[in-house]
Image (tube, rainbow over all chains, first blue to last red; front, side):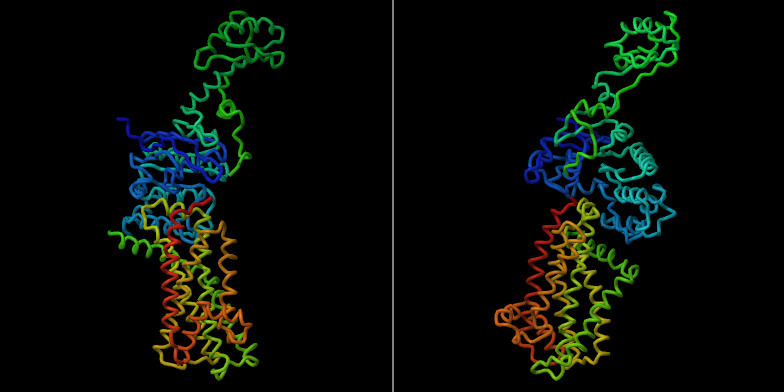
Length: 320
Length: 258
């Protein structure tokens, strides 16, 4: 018997006309985990979320939430999930509180219970001051917070966040990250999609990289970064005349050729995780070279994406 | 809660969402009311002198039920615009991810549009009396006439629901919901006697369900024999509701933002 995952996809295929949106996607998210689905526009992130939230039916494969099949028992699945889609799905003619109570009543919470939950969520998402204002005048960040609050009204066991910070200004994005981190700390299972590598790096404990409808890599942010072949050591020395000496000291400690950036700066690949830095400093010091600066640059997820897909994860590639 | 109770409950919640905001957008209601009143006055004064209809002493008694009918039918276009808006804003995705009744979203929408239409109709009826319109039959006849018009408008709301879900944007819904209303209401008996039209057009006008409904309401408002028109218009409305509620609900169950 396999472990029961909160979210699972096995060989899911979805075709739109001639376009193969999902080409056999496998995904397994344990309960309580925060997973990031990372990929460029048109990679299949939103389609995956739509299959998992019962909005579209897969052509092949199975998808389950808490072990329940999304196609066979969609209503049981719907009772367990919260969805925050790419657009802030709020009724902007209503107030924040009315939006929350409205969704609560559609979950058949009862009006009193829905009001109670609405009040709690308004406090929690810092919307209490604007609770009785019509949403039309809300900023993008406030709409998103309300949107997530609406997804949480019935205490879902799994929360789907489809590009939760797309279109937000940098400050609202940081605010949204705090909100998502709080949710994760509370033990909600979260599957978030993003095309921002920085966002996946910060929020997700496990990242699934998806490109052209296929999962091309999976791992923790650190694992993915180390896949590009370790780290880069950058050393700056005080005096240019020590250049030759410094190079001869560095070469045996590094895994590749030592490149000279300018007279006093060198760059060389090292094995990530090895305690190279102390040895480098000690060796240079022993040889009488004055060290100004030693930096280990770990590859960013941008580097990872480029290495995995052969192209950069830019928004301009949108084919949707 | 059984399935029927759940559908009624969810439909009520949806209808309340739309009705709650009517007073917040009073401008919309005012302009929705001004237009049919303008039509009433324009047609009555501009064409009133030059059009005479056999069997009617004055054109107003013939025309005004036609305009009631037309403006109620035009009011159904709110349904396509409203649903297209919910769809384009992603609200339909949210609703479809909830354990709620599939048909409730459209039932709630069409019912709330019906209420809004009735508000407009009430104002228009008062205006028509000020312009000289009078019931020629009993109050019961007038109530029946209004009922037939309102039911037909409600049936067209379901057609509009399908249009709202089928088009890709609110702007498209705005056109697609309105454009067919013009031939529907003008190639009919609403403004003139179809026998004055070219032969082929007269045939179209007489086959038009809008003609059937308008004739039924007009006869009842004027206290004239209604013949089969009442039953026929009832059949049209019920038939349209039966067919389009099925298609539109199915369409809704597959609709998602793109």
